[in-house]
Length: 252
Ligand code: BGC
View (cartoon, rainbow, N blue to C red):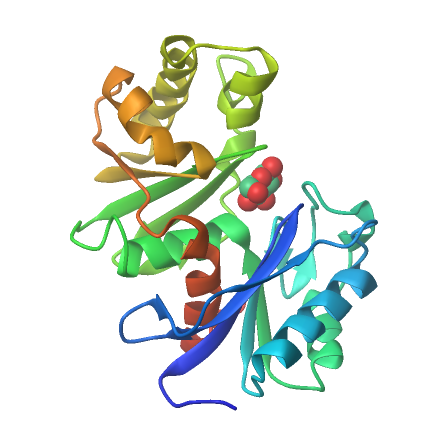
């Protein structure tokens, strides 16, 4: 099945491969998302087979957009965060296209996909100007959008502010590892946001990742200048953004 006005998105992470068909007019999932545990080891071949199984289960035969926690350049993965290192150098477009019977695919960074979705359908849909989404998880992902156009692979989680990489300072995993209170962690997040707003001057920050569910406990504690709003689409943002990317012909 492939339906006009729908596209299929798959979000690949360290723990799950999740996908669904997306209504591109509303950004809503057309059916319950399908989830397969990420294979271990999470090699390209094993993950491609999981993606093919997911698409077969959905009965989808149209184009597919996919995310990876990787920098993607010309379809080739250049980094691999929380997935097998053998992704580095893999032509991900060719890999997934082959696994999916030669159909058209696109592959983009996971945070970039979330950014597209939040900018168009989610938390930032009513904001003009520069939108900077950060996902706080095991690491920090980033997506920079200006008036709907994505600047791919920004990787601001790896920018050093005060001599420390942002994701080493303020990923959600740092809060857990060091048993920080929300007050302590919010101070580190503020340092990251102040550094970024002094460089990029965004109109708004969107905070994503699992910890954005508890936004009420830490966003009010932030001391940076620019407004921070929690992500809206939660765990469907990557799927929606991947579907938008294949529809819009975004091929980083
Ligand atoms: C990676 C990014 C990724 C982010 C979230 C970072 O460690 O460098 O590519 O978007 O984690 O998964």
